[in-house]
Image (cartoon, rainbow, N blue to C red; front, side):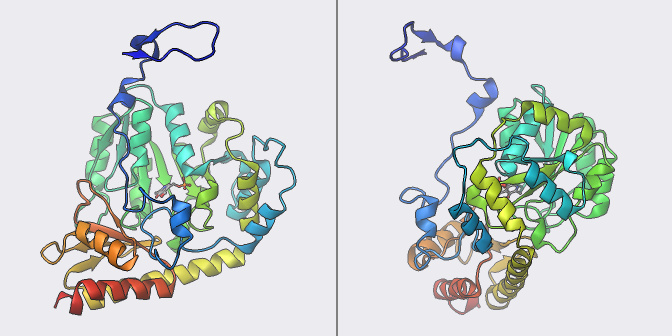
Length: 390
Ligand SMILES: Cc1ncc(COP(=O)(O)O)c(C=O)c1O
């Protein structure tokens, strides 16, 4: 394969494939498909700015607003011309104080996504094994692939999406896995990882990465404090969900001392922009607001789940969730999940998420929003399946 000659350079020569060949694992990666009907016509910002048309978001649109301090701080940003602090000292210290941990163990990233990628780039040699437990967040396998690792999937129990502990331990041992990703609450079902499962996995010779992106909605204390006691534990958190800052891209993690040094070496110096760090600090300055929003969301989650099972339990099975979404099994004898997603979007402007992949084909995931958004979802379901299919 020949690639186009460089334009405008002094030295012009045709470059052949071997010189620019990407690593094999990247060649294997499929390019992403448009994930939902809005993708083709609208940016996420355009879709979200039309709340009357599209209400219930299935993907990447947090329904709640960040604390007012965030927009005020962004509006009065004083030095956008100056590079950010590469150590994010102010934010790490504020987080350390809130979580009662040592700031020396904390690292901030351009979303938790960046930290997953950075971590795997630092610890994986080509062919090293990463274990994940699908259905779960797909970036673990994606980033393992990018880092030329091999992902071994240990599926969750199909009835309640709980971890299959025995098979997970067995896979770690048999494949001499270097890393295991655990997610609590898990995306896409919202189930929690019991403490004794985490403790059992920490006893294995493997780096345990616990992704707590949704932990604020769970009512269960974060395990960030455990990192000081476990040399093989990483805990990831984010401002995307609980502080509604998904668009500003701020995640953070607690890393054991013996590992964090290498992450500092490999990290891009200016990975978190000044606007992002400013926004995160402003969000932390109003814990009462964050708490209030969280409480409202949790109450709405429970109301939505109860309403779904009461009125549509004959064909829709909403799972208990500790996150800001509810996963629902769909009886395809009544309607296929793909048709349900399409009709909700096209006929009612209500977005839910369907995953066209194994293990998830018969489910849709609904994000929790405001009470009026739940009401609109319920009205739309009633119009599509009158009388709850009874
Ligand atoms: C489990 C989980 N971890 C991490 C992330 C990414 O978080 P961030 O927005 O901080 O990159 C997500 C986003 O949906 C997620 O579901």
